Image (cartoon, rainbow, N blue to C red):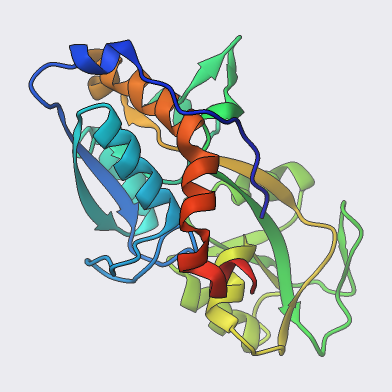
Length: 258
């Protein structure tokens, strides 16, 4: 995991102009992604995750009221596309997603300064199998790669022309990997390592498949209706990210040092 960013907090004049406390319905994955999203299911623990804390602090600075709603990965995409939710915590950019969600952009490119964090995707394999990865192709296997339906890493697999099959959730892919039904599982490293803990029977291959920035994108209807709130939140995320991380890192030591 990498953390980049800028420094000093400053006030945003437009925050005061955001009328009558805009309410933002924010979707969050119902799976944990330590240390950025914590807990599982509908509720959040006392330490909800660094990305959740960052968005909450940005919302407070912008005088915006956020309501958090936990959903499975595919439901998050469906509901931001339909406008049932206004934003999603921790979603990576793709041209396809930009057709129904507003990401922070500069010079027609996604603005990495406004990211919540950067995460790494790797291939995970059974440690006993001789599967190798050179950054372009997998060798010593004829099996497909597993992935979670709707995850952006699928586009990376397509570009690499790697045969894959999807499953609806994380546990299904791990089960298929253990049963030798897939060669590898392409997934976010933080999520896999949190799930496996001290279990070394499944290991990551090097190099990573990709590193991706993750953002707080908004539904197009919300972005059009409340452009000041959208810009204020992105600006405060950019300005506050490193400070929130430094202030709150000790609360998530067991994950950051994992």
